[in-house]
Image (spheres, rainbow, N blue to C red):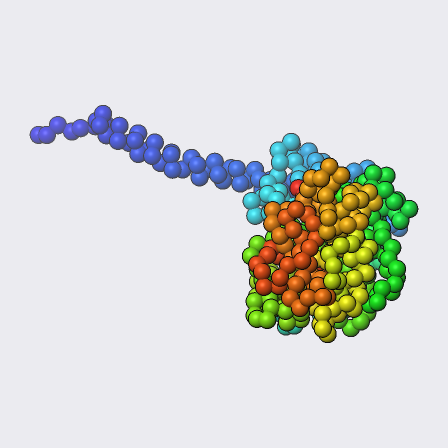
Length: 490
C-alpha cells in the first residue's frame, strides 16, 4: 500500500509565491490607477458641485439685484457649498451670466485633465478675451488678403476690397494693409465697446505699425534758420532753398551733410544711404516729395557709360542706362522693385568742371547739352548728380569743396574727408549723371582725390546706382545709424 502525501513541497510553495508576486506586480498598478482615477473623478465632481453652488448663488444675486455680479464680486457671493474645500484661481463670468472655473484645487490638490490644452479640468466654458476675438478677426483678414493676392497678383490697399469669412462677434477696427500683405489694426471695438490696454495711446493693437519714412525724416530735419553745420549737427538732414531754374520752379529740399549722418537704409538686403528728400516730378508730371538713395558702395569699379561707338554721352541710349534699368533692375528682389518710383531726372550739363554746389544744381536743371541731347529722362534707376556730392560740404562743413568741387581740397591740402559720399567710396573713380555740354562723349565723374571732373563715356569707371523711393515708403524699425539702418517696407 502506497503512502499518501499531504500538503505542499517547498518547491511548490515557492512556485505559488512567485506566481502571486507576478500577479501582484500586474494587478497593483491597475488597482492604483483605478484608485487614482477615482480620486481625480471625485475631485472633478467636487469642482462640479462647487460650480453648481456658485451658479445658484449667481441666480440668487440676479433675483435680488436684477443684474449679474461682476467677476470681482463672485468670491463675495453667499455660496452654499459643504463638500471638500475647493479653491479656483480663475472665476470668470460669461456675458450671459454663465460661469467658468479653472485652475482649481480640491483639498489643496490641483485638479488636472490631460484632455485639456492647458492640462486643467474646467467647469463651464469661457468667452474669448477681447484680444483673442481681435486675433480671430485678424486671421480672417490675413486669409482674405492672401486670397486677394492669389487672384490679382497684388495686395489690396483697403479692407473694403476683401470678403471676410469672420462670423464672430460684431467687431470694428482701423485696419492698415501694407504693401507686402502685412496688417496692422488699432482702435478696435467689440459690440460698440472700445478695446483698451496699457499701451501709450490706450488701445489694443494687432501687428506692428509702420511709420511713413518721409514725415519721420522731416520731423528730425534742422530748420532753414540753421546756417552753420556745427550749430545744428544732429546727424540728421538740413534744409536748403533753391531759386527757379530753367526746368524747375523754386524748390526746398532736405539733405544729409557732413561726414557720418544717420542716413543708412537697408534696400535689396544691402546697405544704401539716403541723399535727402526732394520735390520731384513723376512720370505724369505731378510733383511730390520723395526720398533719394544711393548704394553705399560701388556696384562695379569697371563699367562704361556707353560701350558702342561713337561712345556718346546721351543717357537715354547709354549702355549703362540699359543695364541699370534692365539686367540690374530685374535682379532686385520683388519688394525692392516695388519701392522704386518712376521719376524725372534732369540731364543738363556744363562745358566746365569748375563750380560749387549751387552752380551745379542750376546746371543740372538747365538745358545746356551737346548738339540736341535730351535735357531730362523719366525712369527708375540712374546715378547721383554732381550737386548731390557737393552739398555734403555745405554750411561750412568744408567751404573749399562746397564752392569749387573741381578743386576739392581741405585747407591743409589733403583729401576732402568731411563729406559722407566721398567717405563711403573714395577708393576709385565713379560716374555721375550729368554730361559735358561742350563734348559729345564726356560725362562728370567723382575722382579718387574727391574732385569733380570729366571722363570719356567709353572709359571704365565705378558705378553707384541711385534712385527715388515711392512717396509712401514706410519703415519697420531702425534709427538710420550704420549699425541700425532704417528697415524699408511698403
